[in-house]
Amino acid sequence: MTQNRSLNPQRRALLRAAGSLALAAPVFALSGNSWSQAATPAGGKRIPLQFAWNQNSFCLTPVAVAQETGLFEKHGLDVTLVNYSGSTDQLLEAISTGKSDAAVGMIHRWLKPLESGFDVKIVAGLHGGCVRLVAYKPTGITKLEDLRGKSIGVPDLAQPAKHFFSVYLKRHGIDPERDVTWRAYQGDLLGLAAEKGEIHAIAFSDPLLYRIERDTKGGFIELASNTSPPYHDKTCCVIGVGGQLIKKNRQGVVSLVRALTEAYEWTNTHRAEGAKIFQKYATNLTLDELQHLYKQLALHVHPTGKDLRDQLVFYAQDFKDLKVLKASTSPEKLIDHIFVPIL
Image (cartoon, rainbow, N blue to C red):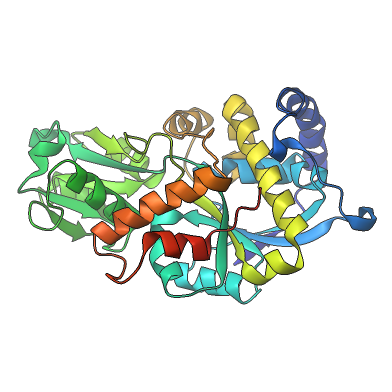
């Protein structure tokens, strides 16, 4: 893990000066929303929080926006960003034991481990998008039904894209275990596997999938994504915090949710500026490519409260139908255990 607490002071000052002007309009216009109201911590001191994220994930551009434009500070927080690339279980353990205060992750990767009992509570959704299913053009596949009898490549068999598209295929009458074959390849070899005819489609997340599409001879056609109906208005990445943190510092959690929600709203309407802020984290992606990738994201989807609970139950039922969750697990009870309506 690497920490990012103090960025280049000169660059940060310029960003804040520009950000304060750009942020002013959306904050004023949206001031009726509960998340847009800046919190004032007791005694005027900012609340320190360690927030784990994967800085290579372009869908988390608003996290960088919140840090570099002073949005976290506006909401009374002193946030240290921790770049985390370990396993999901290790991350959830770090949150549940207080080694990290909060983190962001895909619900399709978190639900199964949270069933095991980590003391991590989901408090907000951030956006929709992230994973896509594409077919290799030379195969002639143009629709989901064409996948019957074909092989789909994934980076690993526990990857969120496999879970999501297994459910998605099942919803469209395709048995994800009998009608298709899932094959695991190291991420950067998936394009080569398609060229060699070893797989006919790929289920993966961006920006890696975008690079595969860009660099593979023959090209790909998109069949579906996790913004396809009925998922078009649902979140995929969520904020998780330690159960003890909510008990000891609920105001800090509320402020974190408000700051990040505001950052997502701002990025949704200032995508070019967001790309400039995030580009230093984007490996081998130009500003134009980042903005192209933003088009697939539902940056305006960040549910809280009952809306989020309903979406989490929906996903948990998906996982139970797929037999990822235990047969004895009640989706409703699971979500009531791991979800806290912070706003």
